[in-house]
Image 1 (cartoon, helix red, strand yellow):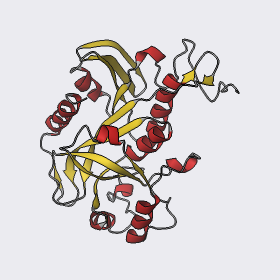
Image 2 (spheres, rainbow, N blue to C red; image 1 turned 60 degrees about the vertical axis):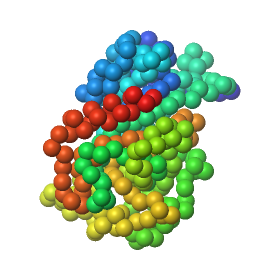
Image 3 (cartoon, rainbow, N blue to C red; image 1 turned 180 degrees about the vertical axis):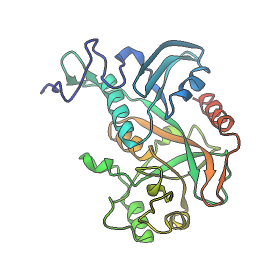
Length: 286
C-alpha cells in the first residue's frame, strides 16, 4: 500500500492534523459542529467535564465527557470550503495511521451533527423554530471535485433543475440524504430539504448593490415539491457535510435554528436564546 505524501496529509511536528491542530486522542466518536467559535462554549458548558480546549485559526475544539460518552464540539467557520477541511481531517484522525501514512484496514465511524442557523423559505415556518435537514440540495460544486457519485440522489436534483429552469452557466445542483440513524433520534423536529449556497448574498437571492443573476430564486424554491418533500431553508454548509461524511462512511445530520423567514421578511428578536434552545434540545438527546 502506498504511503500518503507529506503534502497530501499535512501534520505538525507534534503529529497533529494541520488545520484542526488535533491529536487522535483529542476527539470523541460524537462530534458537534458549529460555525461560530463563540458557540463552542455554549455546547461544552453542557458537558460533565472538559478534557481539552484547542484553538487554531477559526477552528476551536472542546472535548469532554457527557453521560460517560466522549464528545467533541468544533467550530468550522463559514462555508463548504471549511467543511471540506474539517470532515477530511476528522476522518484522517480516526482512519489514517499517521506513523506509516496509510489508511487503516478497520474504519471507525463518527456521528457528526452540525448545529447551525438558517433562513426559512416556506411561509408557514416560524422564526426561532428548528429544522432537521433530511436532504441537502447543494448549489456549491464541491461534490464534483470528488470521484464518488453513487450517493447523489439524481431524481431530486433533476426535478429541481427542471422546475427552476436552472441556468446552465451555474454548477449543477446535487442532492445527498442525511443519516437515518441520526435523523431518527429527533422525530419531533420538522424535516425538509435544506439548500446550501456558496455565498450569503446573491447565491441566496439577496441584493445590496449587486443583483443576483437568478430571478425569483426564493419563489421557485418555495414552490418546489418532490413527493411531498419541500425546500425548507437556506444555509451554507450542509451539502458538503452530507457528501463528504456519507462518502467516508460517517453518520451526518444538520439541525438549524430558523433566525429569519425570507418570505415574510421577519427576523428573530432573540437569536441567542433561539440558538441556546436548539443546543439544549439536541445535546440532551445525544
